Image 1 (cartoon, rainbow, N blue to C red):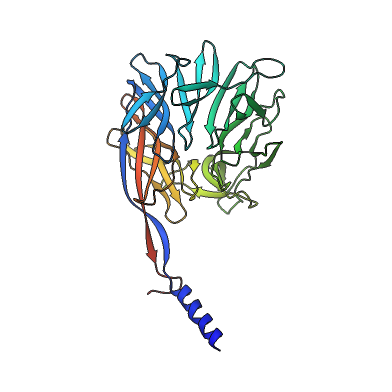
Image 2: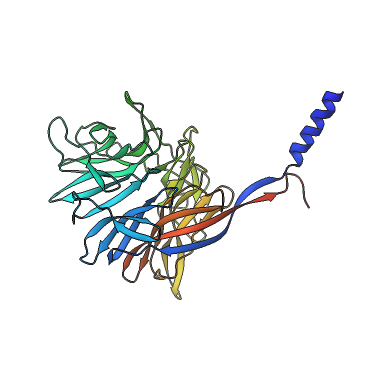
Length: 382
């Protein structure tokens, strides 16, 4: 009887405990500037708040940048010199992945504290015309593409001097890589097979699984080979987009999708009110997602246009449109590209991307304050 009473009390305490959910309580935006030119774009951010991307110099040349402490600077390197370049990823240690142009070729690189390494991209039967890096994980493993005359090959660099073809070096089956997590799981697309994949590097070999589309509903269906995976977190959750075919016969659209890595279908994250399209670009380990979605804007009645807004998504609050910064042109687009983890001390998630200005695209950072609020347990309240 005593045991039963204790169990009952414990059960009541659990039932009475408040539930918690995330809510967005504030957003501040920052124009990251340029390197003297008109345009810039942010590609990635780490948990220290260091941002990488590309920015124009006064000459109009695009250079890879690193933004930290409120200042933007080029990636110092004798190899880069004044060559055009862009940074596409940064890890927790501050190591950067990117691509630079050398004559008519491009080369993937790894950079840390002024030291640059050009990634080896020589194939058994000859050098590709180009290579490019798209992402880096905390172990320094880099993913990207090697481009030949008539096809691209999704590539995993386990070290700067060792690469592995994820989908095979076989013409004409082009393949592309978008992101990599700390387990060496890579997301991308095989273009000619028209399938989206998660490739898994084990150290001894490569396996892959297909990323599924959402299940059909009464309002529409998702063609099975019309999705793309753009981001993956360390839990193995994948985000991207799937093509949506409405049952009413209206035009095809893109819908942001989310796949937990095990379910038979992915989930449709929806669109913004009055919008038709959405794309999810990145996801952190707490399942916060960023991307962009369009909304219908009336600019001179009765004329309207669809403009993109960056968004932050979580299942607790849905798709939250990030406010357009004051420096952005009203008739332009804003797109969120990457995010870091929520800071436990102040609740801030930093999101980076781009907004259009009167002078072109500009790198932007949104500091989103996400608070935890308690709610009543299910079945209670008025």
